[in-house]
Image (cartoon, rainbow, N blue to C red; front, side, top):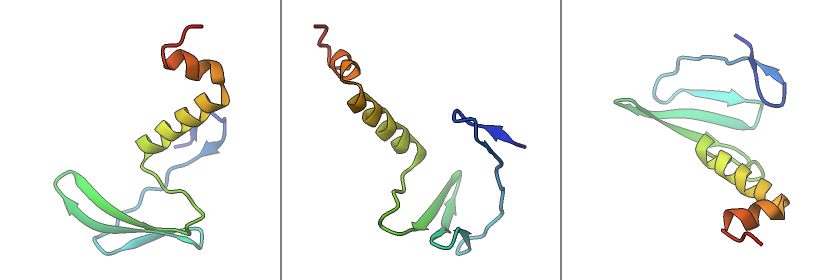
Length: 84
């Protein structure tokens, strides 16, 4: 089912079934391997070039917020409690 993101770019989600030790390639340089499954948690390993940032989604969102607040000094001041 197509998903429309904030940037209005249409994309789809590919759903795959993998067993422990099996991998998925993203392009020719990123390899995602299932390392283990325990209860409701899945451990994955990501092999990617060092030039490519790889983050958990919540860490990525936090970094994006920090980057956007650095770009807007008024946001940074307000978030630090400086109302001047």
